[in-house]
Length: 455
Image (cartoon, rainbow, N blue to C red; front, side):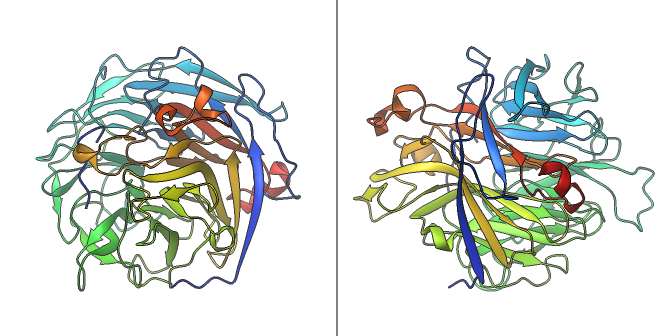
């Protein structure tokens, strides 16, 4: 939700830390430090100056159409089609406004692109029915659609195949979920044009992360407040019958979630990765290979970096053994606190950057990179929703997707631009939400078949 949000020991074999920075620049971004061979390199691409909703991207969504290689970016009610010229080193981005006339307003922006078919659903929460439109041509034309439920907050939308044993006369499904006093999901069997009645989800409460579907049709909806077992903790809901029914799960040993929503990504072989921020505001990741039945012990991908805090995890997976987690983090020496060291409330004085952690061995070892040269936020990142006093500019999440060649693409809001980004920038000036894409252009991605191509 844009304004009214109310929220309530790991082992790791090896963690490598690499500073692979890039400068935000109009036209031709450039890397600041030359990374080690094979490691992921990113460049940052801010929305063009003067673009509609450019500074209103507090809840950005991003998707990639594998058929056209277009990236779709949602900033509030505006959708942009972004193309990258990979013949340039680093690539250059061109942004084209591709918004729907049917969704000029929403309360909770959201977008998802089906990489296989190229369909994109974009819009957001419009009350009991989502204010959503569907495009089959990267935003050149749109059709209004109405996924409805009894709830009216914090929507998520996604695509995926049906279960292999399904008798549905379709090879792709769409899902739309919302939350207020209960969690509900509805599905579409015709690519998002029409929607079935919403199905309630029990066992998890409060807010949830983005819905994801595996290649064999299992649907996952991550949550930081699931009551399977004792107490509330990190887990989610899973559907094994194409969204007709849902059951809840808990991530073993995860404990409580703090700050914002967990995120899941599903590899090509069905391996599920869930990331969250634990009770000490540290990034944690766990893995399941049996459809959320059991989970590995949580690991700390950023252990060697000694972060003071992390938040906004966004998970994207490729091959079964490859996964990336994008997130915001701040390190010791860059912050002080007079609020009990809570990074999500007033009094925390952090200097936040965008990071990624990659694993190429199913989460056993990780390489972590900082992707921004200047801060994306100063101070705290308020998770208080309607009770927030200030610093509610970055809202609830960032997003990540993967290209057909395995490159990771991240949509995030830059909360510290212009004078705020200078050395003498202040917390008071960290109030923006400037739409930005961080895109991998070199190094090992999430599909091994393209390692030589990506360099």
